[in-house]
Amino acid sequence: MNVDAHHHLWDPRRRDYPWLAGDVMAPIRKRYDVAALRSHAAAAGIQRTVVVQTVPEVDETVEFLAVADRNRDLIAGVVGWVDLTAGTADALARLRNEPGGDLLVGIRHQAQDEPDPDWLGRDDVVAGVRTVVDAGLAYDLLVLPHQLPSAISLVERVPSGRFVLDHAGKPPIATGELEPWAGLLRRLAGCPDVCVKLSGLVTEAAWAEWTAAGIRPYTEVVLDAFGSDRVMFGSDWPVCELAASYAGVVGLARELVADDGVFGDTARRWYRLHPVK
Image 1 (spheres, rainbow, N blue to C red):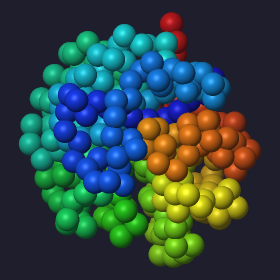
Image 2: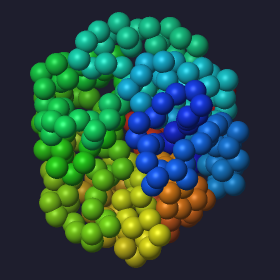
Image 3: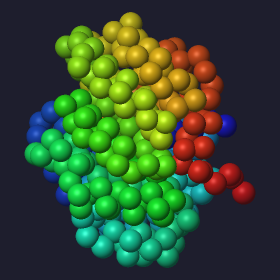
Image 4: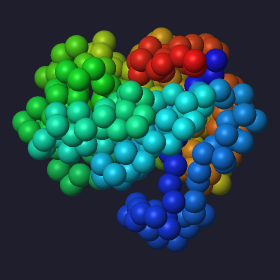
């Protein structure tokens, strides 16, 4: 059963999404709902998905849990948001008591937007992540390449966690460079408690000019560093639509990755996804 381990849903009429501002994001500044997800996933041979937070608001996570609860045949898990710096345990307990609370599989904060490159190394943040891990949840790392050292430090300070590096750490595909991203990625891969998502790569490339050949070297670094048993596929839909269709991203991943486990087994293990009842 194929799993898309990273997608979003949003509706600008209901909520403000600051990162969607500006002309460059205008093509995707519209509603994306479960009906559209179902259509794209079915056409691309995807049976289960994981929806991921888009804004630092608990209310969004509550909504995602409710949507997942109503669509358990498709949405297998929710990676939500809580404040890692205060009241983390209470917030997690409240989310688990919401409709669909059993589908909460992970937590993420958009650390890439933090001006402090060592935000993940702050003592209060580390304590919050430890609470997430102690609650049996995965923690998604959303960082830029220069923040990878902080991510490595966090993982080392929170042993026996389950960490998921989103978008392969955002490699500089558009410039064609590999370092220092590749070296830092290999260091992170040395921590056995981390897996990585092959997601978001088309939007790290030149949107109108990317090719499979141009993305392949970055995929090879990821697979070599982590091994296919610690790599999972994610569409990053609808963000991917800036550069490629849902089906196009799935097709690209299939072209670049031979191991079927990347398209299901890793996500099921790492996020502890419930089977379809």
